[in-house]
Image (tube, rainbow, N blue to C red; front, side):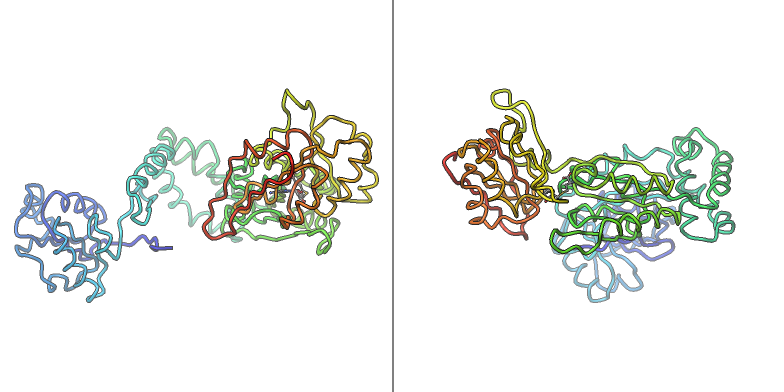
Length: 477
Ligand code: SAH
C-alpha cells in the first residue's frame, strides 16, 4: 500500500494554501466545504479569492512563501505552478511534520487528494496513488452513476436511528442483520432515491427489529469457479458479502477469498487427495451446526458444487436438519479451463458430446465404463486424474481409442499459475511427468484437445508468481 487512505476532520483547523490563482481557488472551495480555517499565502489573489478575503472567509498573507507561514498549520497545500516553490513548501512541511499536498506534483506531496463521490455523510474516495488520475476520475463517474442521488439522506436517517437500534438489539451480530434487512427494504430504497420518507424507513427498521430477534440461519452452497475471480457469478459475490461464515475448500483461490466480507469467519475444510484432514461427514456436521445456530454460512467450493463437489451430500444433510439453503452454480473446471486453454469442448467438425469423468472416488476407477468411454466419440474430460495418467491412457487404448488421439492437460486453469501441455494420448504420462504437472489439473482427451496449441490465448501476467510454461509436445504439435 503506497498511500494510507484516511478521512480527516478539518473543521476549524488551520490549513495554509500557497498560491492565489485558479488552482488555489478550486482547492479552497473544497477545503471550505470541510470547514477548514484557511490562510492563503500569495503576493496576489484571483478575483474569487479576493472576494472571499474581503468577506473575511479566508485570511490573506501578502507574501512569497516562507517556512514560518506553516506555524500552527495542520495541512498545507502548495497550489502554485512553480516546482521550486512546491519543493520549498514540501521541505519546510516535512521539517515541521505538517501534511503537504502539492497539486499535481507527487514528488512534493506527503498526502494526495482523491477523486471523490460525495453523498455526505457518505463519501467514496478513489486514488490510483498518483499513477493515473484520469483513471480515478473515470472510476468516479462510474461509481457516481451507481449510487442513488439521495444516498446521503438514507445514511443520515440511519445515523439518527442508530441508538434506537442499539438500545433494542444488544447482540452486535443480530444488530447487523437488523440493519441489513432494514437497508434492503423498499422504504430504504425509496428514501435513497428521493421519493420516500424517513418515517417509512423508521417503520421498516422497527419491523426488522421485531422480525430479527432470533436470526434464522441460512446456507448458500456456492460454486466459486476454477480460480479467476472474474468468473464468480453475481450471486456468488453477494453470498460472499452476506455470509457470517465462509467454509471453503482448499481449491478456492486466495484472490476469491479476498472478496469475502472483512469480518466474516473463514474456515478451510480443504481435503487434499491422500491426506484426509477432514472427512465429508465432519464437513456436513459442521455446516449443519453453524446454520442451526443461526449463522449465514457460505459453503464455497471450487468449480460447481454439483460437479464432483459433493454438494449433493451437503444439501441432503441440510435438508435432513430442515435448514434453509440456496444453491449457486459455478463454472466447473471442465468448462472454465477449456475456455482459458482455447479448447472448444464440442466442434461441428469433430465431436458432438462431452463426458465428464472422475478418476477418483469410492472404488471409482474400476467402475468406469472404459469400453463405453473409448468407443464414444465424445470429448472426455477427466477430473482428479493427474495421479493416474498412465492407467487412463492404457485403458482407453486397450478399449480401442487411437494412440494418436490428442490430449491436453490444464494445470491450475484460469489462475496466474495456469500451464497447458498437449500431445498424443500415447505420450500423455511422459509429457506430464517431464513438465512436472501437478494437481489441480484437468485432462482432455479427444480431437478438440489439439486446438489448445492454436486457440490458446490466456497468458498469466503475474509478476511475482512462477513463469508460465506452455509446452507443446508430441506429433500433434
Ligand atoms: N467441483 C469442482 C471439481 C472438484 S474435483 C468443479 O466443478 O470444477 C477437483 C478437481 O477439479 C481437480 O482434481 C481438477 O481435476 C479439477 N480442477 C478444479 N479446478 C481446477 C483448475 N483451476 N485447473 C485445473 N483443474 C481444476
